[in-house]
Image 1 (tube, rainbow, N blue to C red):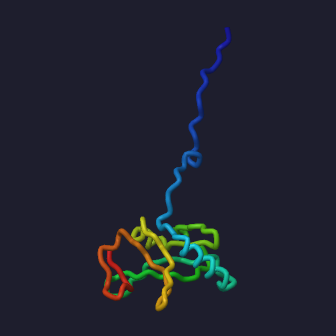
Image 2: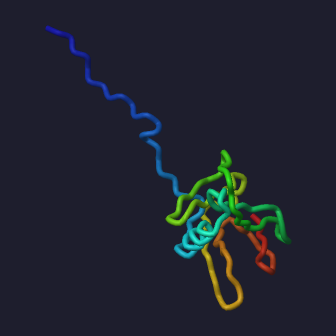
Image 3: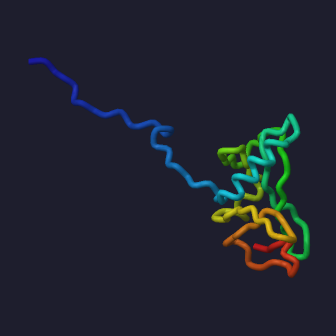
Length: 130
C-alpha cells in the first residue's frame, strides 16, 4: 500500500483574489470627451489631467483640473478612452462617489461635479465644504 498525500488546494494568491474597486469618481460621456479633447491639445510632457481639491474660496475647497506630467504615488488613476484622469491622493476622500460632467451652454463651459460628500457650497458655486 502506498501512501498518497491528500489533495490540497493551494490558497489563491492575494492578486488573484483582488476585488475590483469602483473608481472614486465616475465620468460622464461628456467628461470623457472633454478629457480626450484636453489630451489632444496637451503639452508634450502631459501624461493626463489631474483632479484635486485645493483649499480655496468661501467654503474651503474647490475643484481644480490641471495637466499632470508624472504619476504621484497615492493618486488614483482612471483610464478613459481619450486619456487618463488622475485624482489627487489627498482629495480622494472628499470625492468618493462623485460624478464629473462637462457642461456647455450659451454662457459658460466647465466641469460640473455631483458630490455626495459636499455638505454645502458658496453662493457662486466655486467652492464647497465637506
